[in-house]
Amino acid sequence: MVPDTPVRVGIVGLGTIGRIHAERIDTLGGELAGADLDPAARTDFEIEFDAPTYPDHDALLESGVDAVIVGVPNGVHETVAVDALEAGVDVLLEKPLAHTVESAERIAAAARDAEGFCTVGFTMRHSAQTERVRALREVGAFGSISHIEVTYLRRGGVPGSGDGWFTDPDLAGGGVLMDLGVHVIDLALHVLGHPDIVEVSGTTRSEYGEYAVDDSATGLLRTADGRTIAIDTAWHGTCEPERACVVRGTDAGAAFEIGGSELSLVSADAAEPVEVVSVDETDMHLAEDRTFLEAVAGERDPPNGIVEEALSVQRVIETLYESGTSGTAVRLDSPVAAADGSGANE
Image 1 (cartoon, rainbow, N blue to C red):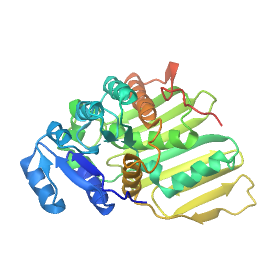
Image 2 (cartoon, rainbow, N blue to C red):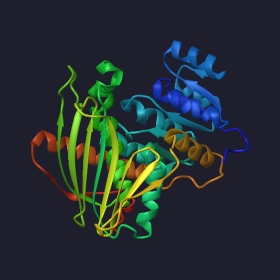
Image 3 (cartoon, rainbow, N blue to C red):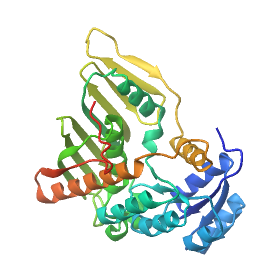
């Protein structure tokens, strides 16, 4: 469903992710505007989308947009998102929530007090496979889920070839764990219903570049009720590229290549054959932007709890870095969970 009246969406940051969103908002019938410090980026955007641009987000907000999509470096998220929320504008903020937990907490506080709503760009939530697995979990098809593994591995996939803000610790807050790890952690927690995390163990590595951030990370999370989550991610892995999720339950399990067109369902009865279910192959950014536009237009309820869940993901990432530095598992005296208490057990 596409809103009847065009929604005016401002894209803040006209780099790669900003243009990905702009293309889909344009396809969905939204009215575009843009903001970027770079005059050349503004000119290209104006030509491609026949849309006005502004030199900064303040001027964009003053122009009267209905919503903004924030695609600037992580270290600038707080400034743009808080200003937009205080202006009463709806916000789609690219992941992660921020470059530090403290900054993420301030964004979450602003979102709680805002007239508009804020959502976060966790695109993997929007795959048809993720939605099917969530639905199966809710009806108890897996029994009790005991373990989830999520991997996001690239081969030669360092953003900007290692020479951009993604490898600047002051702007990014970290490396691959902040870039790709945030996706896999959120997906696993989303499938489980965001349970409390009580222990985190992980290792981060910098193996392939002359930068001061991690380019691969491996972690194990344990929930309050004993379930586990394994994550593995790399910008430049010596392996086949992969975006995969495996769910293991007492009655059944599932496996899928994220964003693909198939979902494998595996019964606990070894005599039962693996069932391969066809699903619609999803343009996850398009699905995400459609959901956002419809919420801005009032044609669906605004998303609930995503910022708090993003804050819990940010805390897990910080704890993974702590574990990697100390070389030991980190036991959490205060379990990491969505700040509104929405952590769910099955």
